[in-house]
Length: 157
Image (cartoon, rainbow, N blue to C red; front, side, top):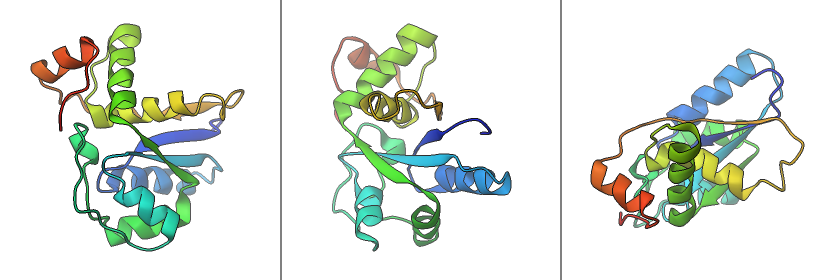
């Protein structure tokens, strides 16, 4: 992470972003960590913004790796302490990021894995001129959902 100004990390139950916080802190770096959630599963974003644990009744996103409705208390404590901000991305933005990965890098990513790129694309003006990174994780995307996404659609949750 040395030399990176910000890194975008998808948030599911919180283990990935907590690991990123721990790595950054262990290395003594100042890299901003930006959490990413689906706007249809906003429990972590809402909790971050309100400074208290907030659960949601639903988490209707095709990015099932980010479909948490109830934030984990220990993860939330680390996120409040170590994350700069949390960005929400739409289903359409996530699907577009999957398409970009396939077309431009020939990598297959599930929705949650592509969410970081979706957030970076959404923030492109905000981070212009900065050195940023995204976490690309998870290739658990079945053929029918991939076909929908590549055809320009957004899969149902």
